[in-house]
Image (tube, rainbow, N blue to C red; front, side, top):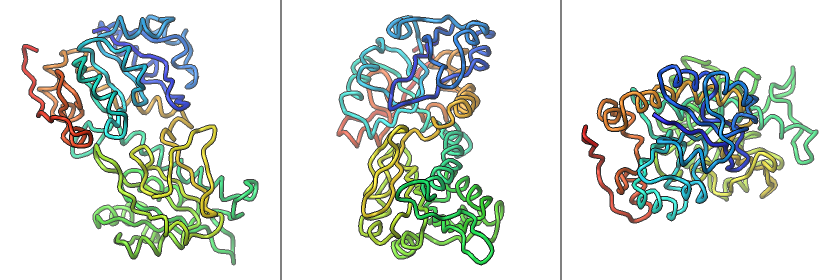
Length: 373
């Protein structure tokens, strides 16, 4: 199979879809990999490294799209990128189509593109590709929150995360005990913070107590407990994840108004719309804004802060599925791997994800794949 890796252009994205090790695996299996020059630069992978493992370096992004059967990306598609896709091509990326523009989805359908979303692929009731990025985002949420709590930032509260003898540590309140919340809790606990985690799922809360520490306060989430936690927080981390849809505003604007002056919100859910009512997307170069005297950090592609680690993690998590499609062909791969098939959002001109179809009022058709396709 001919596989293309374009350079990312979306919202200061610094990751690359495949590290050289992943490209080497595909080339050794007999596949051809076209990679746009400079695609790995922001992750400190050079063209020479890709060339050394057998990739073909392409100096024009249109050529990457034109010569490839499958495009492998990181960030959601832009309109320009959709325009470059070829009829009946395969696109493999984080997509978040329900939050994007309708025109992007319509163009995917009109071109009969098979669009596979990393964030929807399942395995053993988990989301393995998304999980790799969520682990990073959970750790980073504490790291960036700690940065903006410091006095070197103009609006920071001047709080040491772990406190000292006789002085209380920072109160880190985490809403959501999934992969992001678990990793945020582990990181904040290791830094000596007073950690409070809220979730409706008691099993997830037990996991935090059993696998990290019983000294972490776990609370059953409801409107009352969330309001109390938000008001208490020095650092509030939003870690709610809704499959295929938009995240509800768990934290209202009134709750934000009740927060301490200079408190920090890190809304990790912003790539799905955000779980804090006052959140809006920011960028790596301009990551925060102040509203109601509260610092908001809402960067959708937070793992790009550690682009090399994230690119390796994404490669490790996605290679299994890229290999299956390249080795067996699209139809056989989807038939053999139900978890991979669950990631398919558009196929043969129809929307095959019900939540995305409902979001735009489009016809939904359950995915039907035949070996002869």
